[in-house]
Length: 352
Picture 1 (cartoon, one colour):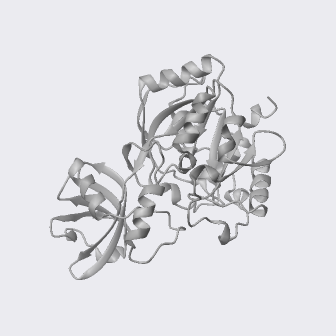
Picture 2 (cartoon, rainbow, N blue to C red):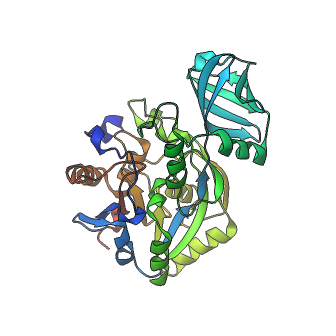
Picture 3 (cartoon, rainbow, N blue to C red):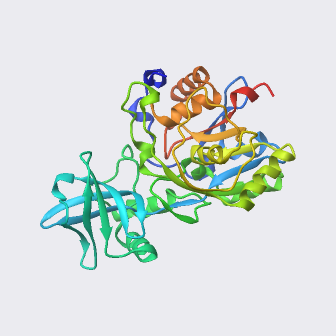
């Protein structure tokens, strides 16, 4: 399909720079019926049914944006893909100042060697620490890797970063490894989850470590030529059994976020059952894809011509999503990571 089919006009003013407080006060565009309805996240308990299962991503974002030096030159890197206990691929600014074999120094006892480099501005760094020790040092020295369209003080601000460290995590966050938040989950609070459970709506967590590739633009003209980034995910046997049991009892599987949906669909058999999964997924979902595992999707509003807008268009219909996004823009909804959200039903289930 032509990438231009997924384009629309999005004023820059629509992109949220700060999150709404409290979390469950964000707007929610209800797309579960033929007519659009404006709600808030706190309305979720009356929009779902007893027996439904919300599947949430429990990945935890780690602060992977680092500032250091190569000699006297100041360099900023954003780690985006771990390939070993002490090695990460990173985007570097300016990349030309990091040369093969040289050291990138963050502090006296925290540094990395440049092992490889690409023409696109990526560098492979091998740190002098590994495993949990490296993660601990990232929490000491790193800054939360917010998306490039969320503007913060140049050079970093401690108060801003402290606020983002709390707000750019979901209440489900447990498994460290993401460099971007599963943003639909940012709208949940402990109070809302308890209310949902009291109504008989279940929760199940799975893990997909979101990578920075989720923000990369689609640079080709046809979706068939796009190379999707890969991300590491895990669904345990117990988690798979819980999801399958929900479907067997007539409950709906509600993916909280596109990350949960992508992992569920990666692990789904042709009959819709979920198999245990551990590994990389680079699933790229565009219109024409046959969904096997997910009945409903809670998701924030995505950018034009992005792989995520392609995904929601595949799930709920391109024309319908374009109309929904126009409604959202005209109605003052806030877009992307810190923005508002929506609840979609799969296109073939819309009349149910």
